[in-house]
Amino acid sequence: MDRLIAKAKADMDKTVEVIRKDIAAYRTGRASPALVDNLEIEYYGTKVPLNQIGSIQVVDLRLLQITPWDKNALSAIEKAIMTSELGLMPTNDGNVIRLEIPSLTEERREELSRQVKKRLEDGRVAVRNTRRATNDAIDKMEKAEGLSEDEVRVGKEEVQDLTNEHVKMIDEIGEEKIKEILEL
Image (cartoon, rainbow, N blue to C red):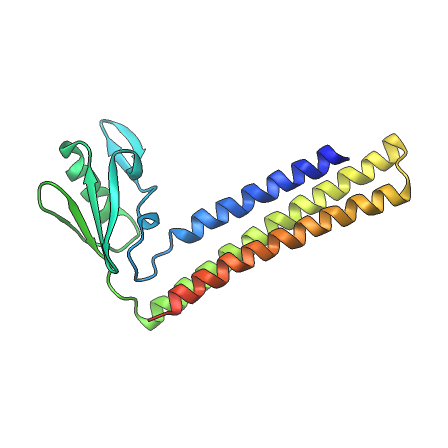
């Protein structure tokens, strides 16, 4: 039973981490390396995340600077940014690419807020699905290995506690991001 609970915890941890990364990529009107970190760049015929071919620095509140380690990658980075759904226009000076992050309109803030809430709900559902699968496995163990009702109850309570803890973590990530999005 301990293995089942440990696996459930690991699965829930992965879900929270995926949500954290996904939510970090939402544009908030503030410069953040997470905005372009994992942007796929076509580099010598291979798709590579931007953070593997250059450094990304926050110059000020609304300006990112991307310095590729290979100057030949500048045009590929610029193209990837322009074709992405970020809605940003890169400025290439031959050595670095600068990205000015425009302020968000009220309408765009509300849209982003809705997208974040939807993504958070997807995360909560994934955590609950893990709970359900673990509880089903505990029920099967009860029949196959003859676990007592107390052992089953304790196991399911542990799984529920894990679920509550991870849903709370997802909620906290979301509250912070939505606050950041709605901030002027």
